[in-house]
Amino acid sequence: MACIFGIDIVRGSIRGKRRPKYALYVLDDSKSLKFREISRAKLFRLVKNYSPEIIAVDNTSELFSSKEDMVSFLKKLPDVKLVQIAGKYSLPYLAKRFGLRINIKDPMDEAKACAVLASFGVGEEVSVFSDETRIIVSRNRSLGKGGWSQNRYRRLVHADVMRVYKEVKEILEEKGLEYEEYIKSGYGGISRGVLTVKAPRKLVPVTSFKMGNVQVRVEAVEKERIEYIPLSKQTTYTIVGVDPGMTTAVAVLDINGKLLGVKSKKNWNSAEVVEYILSFGKPVIVATDKSNPPEFVSKLRASFNALIHVPKEDTSVERKKYLVSPFKQNISNDHERDALSAAIDAYNAHKNKLISVEKKIPPGVDVDAVKVGVLKGMTLKELIEKKSENQEKIPRQKSKIREIDRKLENRIKELEEENEFLRKEISELRNEIERLRCKLVSISRKEHEKIRKDNYVKTLEAELLELRKFLKEKDSIIKELNEKVKALRSMKILEFSGWKSVKLLESFTRAEIEKLEREMGICDGDVIYIKSPAGGGKSQAEYLCRKGVRAVITKSDKMAHTALDVFERNNVPVIDEEELDVRVAEYFAIVNSETFEKVYSEKIEKMKSNKLDNLERMILEYRNRFRKTSLE
Image 1 (cartoon, one colour):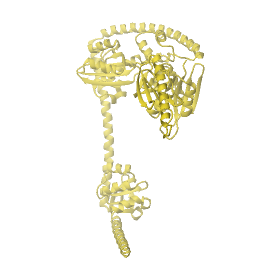
Image 2 (cartoon, rainbow, N blue to C red):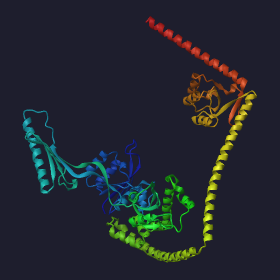
Image 3 (cartoon, helix red, strand yellow):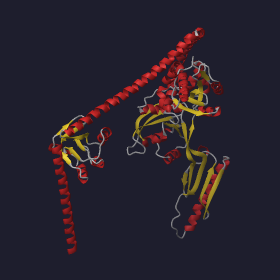
Image 4 (spheres, rainbow, N blue to C red):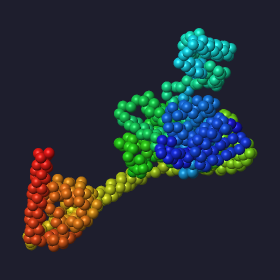
């Protein structure tokens, strides 16, 4: 078995301040090694020491910060194949598909899964080099500033460069390799020669070296962009629900019941429908919600050579709604609902069989491909044998081969017994189906009518339940609004009794202000009582000032200075609650009107006086500064 490195990041980031640590799992013929937490530098040293054939990683961004970083690494190790496991599919999905159990929270488990999946041929090779190699022959020494012997020295160096350049060309020609050349002439020879060889780096029989006056650098030619080449083809198998008509709808699930896509279109021709379906993968089942499949669905099934799924009787609207309820946000009309319900119904019909098959497949076998074979009538034993014949020899540890073979034989025996049991059960079920069909034919027209009425009544009952729920929500809103109206009436009554109503803020936060404005409104001239002024600042004060509040009542010694400054600049007095007789209700507070007006007037006068004092002080300071400047 070739040596394979599986790598997963434990913590840190290649781009962050915290240096990354990695988990490394080495999969080899002779041994399996685990390194639970190593630095990036140590990881690269181990790569150089072990020279693995494959480095498998969940995503290359965990190892390299840029394309240049990746290219620099791969240039130093031309024989190493870098494989990204999680491309189109996630690592947990691929592990499950190939029978591996991993703990996604354990980096060592993920590193092991990367290595094992790569050995199964899963993942994409990261290709950064083209099938060309560049050989650069140039001076190894500077020619210096010059002197009596400068020309002779220059001629000697350039002659050596030309001699080595010709020797490299002869080696390439002996091997029959095509190349293009570029030469920069120098005094007495050449100063630089570049050979672009039409072959990959590993096939070029020249290595980089330095010798005397000459250096030779051999490097692979980079591609313009990174390419990801699959190690082996991974097919996505799908279950397709179709609702044909003037508006055709298509819903696509994968073999495990995950929704891949749903779409509807008016006058959608069959070629476009086929193209849309194939964009997700290969259909295994084509389903409809009609007991008698439409001609369009039958033709579609035939074009894919897929199985067809039809219900025993036309699917009711109530059942369709129930089936698609987890995917309400994904559908936009009744056609898409019908197509999706057909696909889900087809998946549910085979769900237990698929789950049973999944539990009995050994590691290393494509679970989805085996599921498809079972759906098409093949036995599990036949499928596993067929996979073994067609599959390339999978690298395995020699110490575990016999144990795996023994487990496979036991599983095959179990499956053969189960298969025989299922065949008998299928035969019995077919007899039962035939009996029920005969019984169905004998049902009278009156009974058919009764069933239809019962279904209609059930639909009406479901609609009634929804309407009752809607009515209950409205009653709750009305009750809440009535309580608020009652509170507002109480405020008005108190105003006639010598009390003034003020609006209540539980805390001085933007959320509470918006809640008050939404529920009671904040109007020009309102007085606001703030129970807890802590936490409020400049922005909250400015917001109340923009709303035109007349005054604020609170514990002024606990309010932020920034808020007090804003209120003072906008002529909004902040009155300490101890100066007034404040009484708090559920939605509002009240104060004695006479006391409030008296304190309010005093605060306004005090604010005006403070502003005049400040203005006089500023004028006095300005005059003193001007007088001082004149004297100087």
